[in-house]
Structures are given as structure tokens and as C-alpha cells.
Image 1 (tube, one colour):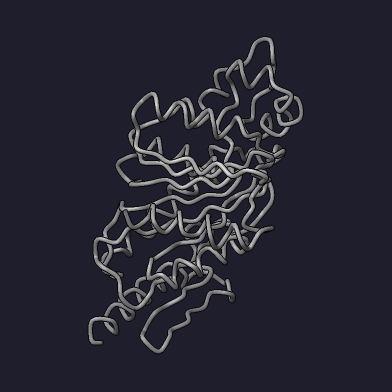
Image 2 (cartoon, rainbow, N blue to C red; image 1 turned 90 degrees about the vertical axis):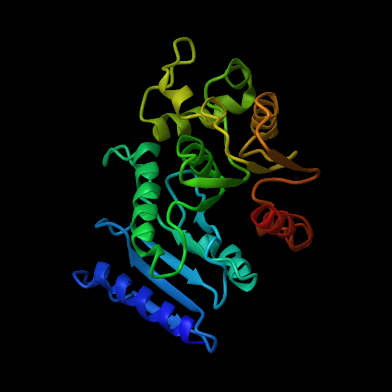
Length: 289
């Protein structure tokens, strides 16, 4: 009990150091009867979107990875509250987690996926500075993203294998540049969005290398990856998940593809049965294995 009280005291005191200069009145801390904690709207940067929720269960091992949740919303919509049910599930299973907002894609504000990756880096940097107070290890993360958040999780994770131990992608796009993508009907309706995300004109006959750089399938590193893909996903075509699965297989990277039949995009929102019997069990198994 003494250990739990000290953990709470030092973590919250450290956290307050980052928000004392802020006028954000929404920051709050909840402490349970066993000194488990939920810290809401902790600033990790100066932008109004740069906030995160930190959930710390009452008893976890010091070598526990921290799961960093990245919401979806086509890169230009969405908020961390869309991932709250997953964060609650992790909390219930004694897994520490961070649920972050990030800056949204905007042509006028010159925000692309690159700035969103920078936000992930900043969130990790802030928690690293608090990890010791929370009795957790720095640079010991699992990224879990959904839809556009899945793309960001894959790309950041593959680029930073020193920080990211595992990746979980729920319906995440993976390929914006291959011939198969360019020849697909999927590219016809997804290209305008991808152009804004990458911040470069999408010229199908002379495609910029920036689209390859933004594609997880072209940035693979040795980070174990769990993929969820629905065969009836019209927002993120099934070939996206299958293409990354094949690339990981070719490179002999530890991975698993959960390919769900009769399933569309982000199925946890629409099917309690699939969420509770397929998606959540696979997530927990991947985190704990």
C-alpha cells in the first residue's frame, strides 16, 4: 500500500509541473480505492490538441509496457474519447495506458501526417520524463491505433523500433504508392484524402516519393505487429491489410493478421460480439505474450 501511495504522489506531482502554467481547467485526477489513477487532459505540448489521458491501474509490474492509443478520423477528425472504451478495457486488465489527442491535418495550417508523428514523439517524451515516478520504464511502448490512427501507429512504430516494442493496427491504411494501390478502385476515392495527409500533389503518372515514405508497408522494421482487417471494409480496402501481412511475412517479422469475414471498417463500434469475442481477446493476448 505504501508503494502505491508513493507512486501516486510522485507521479501526480511530476504531472502538475507540466500544467501549472496552463489555464486549462479540464485537467483532473481521479484516484480509486486501491490508488489506481486516471489523469485526464495532461498537456504534452502547447497546442490545444496536445493533451493525453493517462490510466494507471493499482498494481502492475515495472517492466509492463505502456499502451499508447491513437484515435482515427481520416487524419482530420476524431478525438481521444473515441478510444476510451479500449482504454477502460486495458485498465480493467491491469495494463497502463495513454490515450492521446493530436493535431489534425489542415492545409491552411500546414499540418500533415508528419506533424502528427511529431505529436506521438512529444507524448512519448513527456511520459518518459514521468515514467520513473510511475515506476515504469521509458521507451517501452505498444502503439495501438485505429483507422488513420492505425496508419500513424504503424509508421511511427516502424521508424522507432528502439521505443516501440509492439504495434496493434485496427483497420489501418498501409499503402499509398504501390502499383497495386494505384491501379485499384480504392485509390480513386482515397487519393484526395491521402494527398492532404501527405501534403504533396497526388500525380498518378508521376507519383512523388513522399507517398512511399508515408506508407507503412515501405517502412517495415523488426517490430511485432498485430493487424485487424475486415473483408468488407470500404473505407480501408482489404488489400491494405493483406499487403502489409504479405510484406511482414516476406521479411519474417513476427506478426498476426486477424482477417474478419463479413466485417467492415472499425468493427468494434458496430459489433459487440466481434469486439468481445475476437478483437479484445486478441489485443490482450498480443500485449501479454
